[in-house]
Length: 396
Image (cartoon, rainbow, N blue to C red; front, top):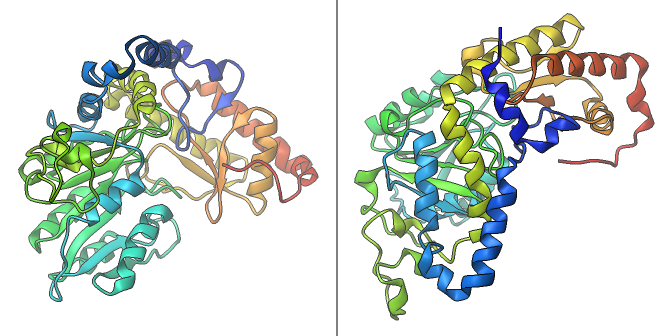
């Protein structure tokens, strides 16, 4: 059967010389980025400061609208930021806890950088954190998440897809439980947007955060924030700046007058080069559509699962394809060294402690590349080629 998505393969230079299976960490760069970065340079070189008034200042919103189409969000409901850690801090600054409602609930498999933000803010005692434990180190029981969300809960910052194992959480059930007790949900879709279809609007989620580095093939420095339209004027973020002002170029002193739209969730000057570099990936994902990408992803992750198991490897990702994102994790006691040897051989994957080797095909991946990968993996294991490596080496 012809794989129609492979027609996009020519848009990604790195796949010409490597077996690139690391889209959960850094998606392949589209060729179009060369032109977009040249466009940025030309704009700066020829228009200078006038560029701000000729499109740069509006880019957090105009580029955000490209993301909105991918995540099923309303127009003018997404703005761009530098990264998710900043966005989480910004969102947390919107809330004033009370003794009766001060609990933050999230899974212990949440991304560490996110947990750092909330744990740091909890030091002063205003917030109480409840971490929902995993039974197996790879998944989070839904009943435990739901039970933890109670009348004291203020905020639930959760991963849609867990970075360590690709476990796909039931966002809809968690959002509904949170809303039933008056809590808000921050849905982190860094590991799902671009490979797992969802609609922010249909989920009725309060906030969506994520970035472009991974499945969106947009590069670093282009995080995104969705705020449900009916909530946009409800909050006054304390993490703020002049871009959030209703009249930023009036340079007024005193208390900030927040913009009356999604722009109030901005802060300082945007990272313009990152917003240029992100657009080519968004355009391609938008043209393909996430549904076909998900269909191919489920086919290829299932293929990987079976190939790895047939060679005696233990796969730590969920068995049910409907309960995982686009990544397969493969366990081995020296997974770290095997990963370094794979990378040396131009099979680009990565390793996470406690999970194993993370392997992620994307829409530009050929089926035969998965067969080549597992064959290489087996050869490295059986010949113990990885033993030449020391603890220090390539890190991602």
